[in-house]
Image (cartoon, rainbow, N blue to C red; front, side, top):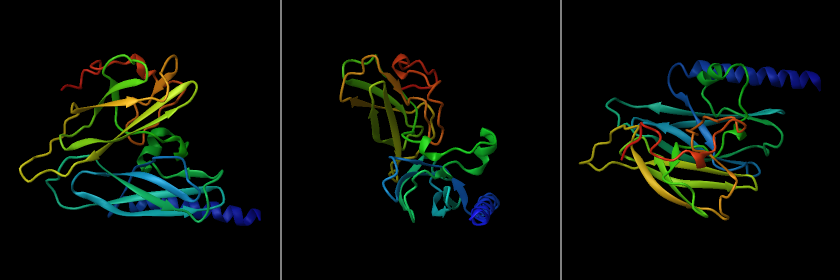
Length: 240
């Protein structure tokens, strides 16, 4: 049994190395995040496609006893691309539920070197999206949110809220809106959109988190700021 497990580990490592090598030409690896906790043998993903010249090539699944590796790839076509942040929703069916196995692959290989030798379990990268700020201090159950949508052709797709006794997590997701023939999309890190979030209970003394979570970047919950204390337009890079 130990020999079988050892060989499986070697095979898994080889698959990861091949993924890194293949990303150097042809389809390139891209980021993804879970939109909700694993549902049995099904994973619900937001896959980062990128600009208007990119499209999803495939999503590969590799499963062994201790790990599940999900690798998403995109193709690039042509030039003079519409500069938008295109995110697609996909479901991935596994041979068996994730269970206690490590879930990997949400970051392209280059990010592993940035993070150091430790790999990220992708269940910890969830409810992340674009940056947002409160437009004014919380009032009762209502949060008035200002989101950074990055491009003139982007719009808020949905807002995901998770509440517990001590914390409220808010994730704002952005989608690309197809431009009209007469409309040109422009990248603008200052582009914003407003929305209102209604909680189940007043925020009160609970910590509000999620405002500094761009796609596939997970902050340490222990050091993450309390977003109720960060009121727009404090980020000087954002404007109407």
